[in-house]
Amino acid sequence: MNAATAPVDAFLDHLQVERQASAHTLDAYRRDLGALDAWALAQGMAVDALDAAHLRAFVANEHRRGLSPKSVQRRLSACRSFYRWLLRHGRIEANPAAAIKPPKAPRKLPQVLDPDEAKVLVEVPTDTALGVRDRALLELFYSSGLRLSELCGLRWRDLDLDDGLVTVLGKGRKQRSVPVGSHARAALAQWRSQSQPGSNDAPLFPGRNGPITPRAVQLRLRLLAQQQGLFKRVHPHLLRHSFASHVLESSGDLRGVQELLGHADIATTQIYTHLDFQHLSKVYDAAHPRARRK
Image (cartoon, rainbow, N blue to C red; front, side):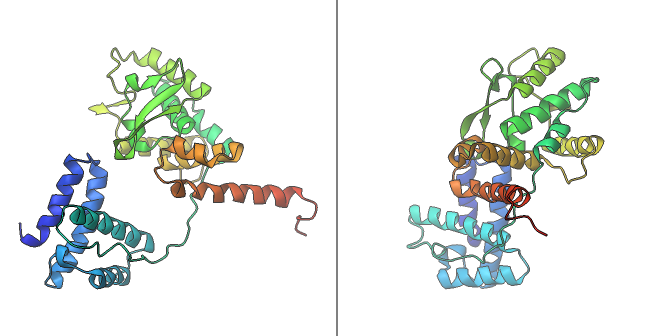
């Protein structure tokens, strides 16, 4: 290993050992900081010797190479975290990425299912063993707004059907408890009765070798959506988006939705206010006598 990559490797070790970052997070940081490392080497420099002018040139280069504004934003965010860590450990005197602004990305609103479509999707037939499992999985997914990784990692011990709560381990290994709706509780009780897990440590949704995999859920969800007659591109995060939009639409409580989703920053949750406004605009246009279009 050459000296230029040593600071990046040390930071990745810190993420893995001290912050216990997920494999997905580590891969993202490795990819983004690897790009910075390669660029620095091409300039004949080490990453811990770059200044703000170098970082601006790196960001501009990534943008010219065709990286989307959102990807450049993520890359720069990784750089900020990396240099903040170097500064904290006395390896540099200032964070060269602190004041650099990434290119603006156009706001892209997530697609959602409307409540009727969500109802059609989750109410899959339960006349087979796989159908009982699918119904429980979909009801819980939509009922509690879980991330795909959170759903796949669940064990029976994480579920309290009596109180209607599920405890999940989210990003940054932060634990939160989320309500489970009545339809999901009924579907999960039926699934527990049929699957007979035997132990509270058993995966809530087992796969071939341990818990069900994210890829298996993605493929199953796509197939179920087609079978239920939904022709949107249905993917796991669509259920989370739909959950957030429907709860906000009914409650107007943005802070509550933030807590339910496990977002560290409310700015991440605010995108759903735009979705809610779209809904209100449609209601207004359809109902207000001075808004109807000729």
